[in-house]
Length: 256
Image 1 (cartoon, rainbow, N blue to C red):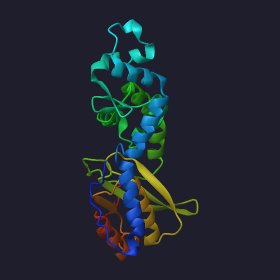
Image 2 (image 1 turned 180 degrees about the vertical axis):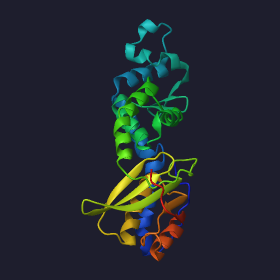
Image 3 (image 1 turned 60 degrees about the vertical axis):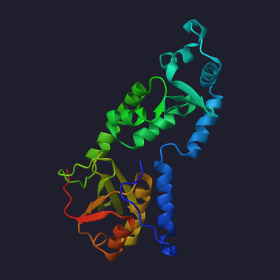
Image 4 (image 1 turned 180 degrees about the horizontal axis):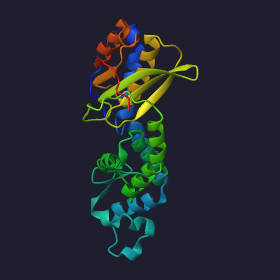
């Protein structure tokens, strides 16, 4: 998913890092860019089951299920939806993922921290392999205890009144001190997923650098909420908000 807020890119040298972050964000968030397709094609060529399935798609499928292996039989109920395009098997418009890449795909779904239901929905429109829904459920469930532990042990600069429609549409941010170090926390109001970064210093420029890194990975939010710390009310932060196209609201975070 691309950013909800468009970034304004200038042409002077001061924004070279901004452009790089923006490009990285686009590459990361485009669901199936060329490099991914090349990898899927390569791994499909190494996958014995998918190669057998490819031959059946091209040469014609047998009428008798006894003529296919157990692995290929897992695709039998979808046989009329399968096609092969440039070395990649499609189920309708969804990419059939080789076995060697499935764990990585589950990790990517988990990175969004959308939960089992939303991860299934996301996968439903883009990728496929037999048993994918059950594997999503099992994979995400294994992390539930860890996620709850992280959330319960970290302050959450979120307002209960916020109900954004999409992930990373509205975020909260704060700075906290722990064990002789300062840290930046950024929380997504939609998923309640958060990221923490150790700060080299607490100047606005340092905070902005780390926020750009997070936004480059997840997308530029439409709204950013913070307290009235000097970093957030500085002219430099106002310029950051204007350049990156998000609305900054200053208020007291509601910790839960």
